Amino acid sequence: MRSNSMKKAVIGICPVCDNKLKVTQLSCRRCGTTISGEFELDKFDHLNKEQKYFAEIFIKNRGNIKEIEKELGVSYPTVRKFLDEVIEALGYREEAKKDSVNQTDILDKLSKGLITSEKALKLLNGEEV
Image 1: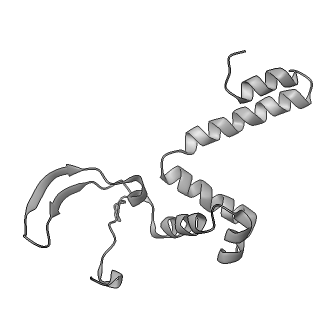
Image 2 (image 1 turned 120 degrees about the horizontal axis):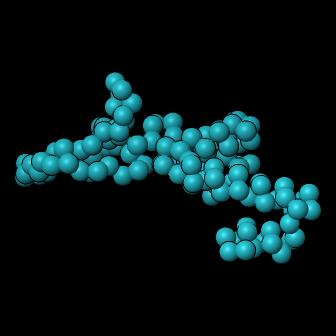
Image 3 (image 1 turned 45 degrees about the vertical axis):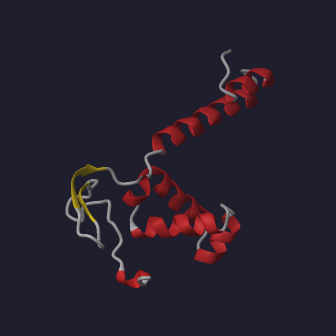
């Protein structure tokens, strides 16, 4: 078995222009077979080194923000910033942002008495009103 220190990580972002890279050739170390074409990288291959490290720490700590803060030696806002960067790099930013804004709107209307709690609950659950 080869040591991990000898392996080079796949990069998913162009170091020149920051655009996503595509794989155009695969080869077998054992028999030398080479396959050419266009192959898609996994979403996680598009994360930079720091984002991959944060994702690993996040998973290791089961998403427990307090434990992540302690392990990385950073504050809650910094953990949230790192998490938002990973979410965006994975392509989920807009979707998550829309949901968050929509929920805030609904709760704001509820607190102002503009909608009932029943209507707020239905809206938060994505039901038609």
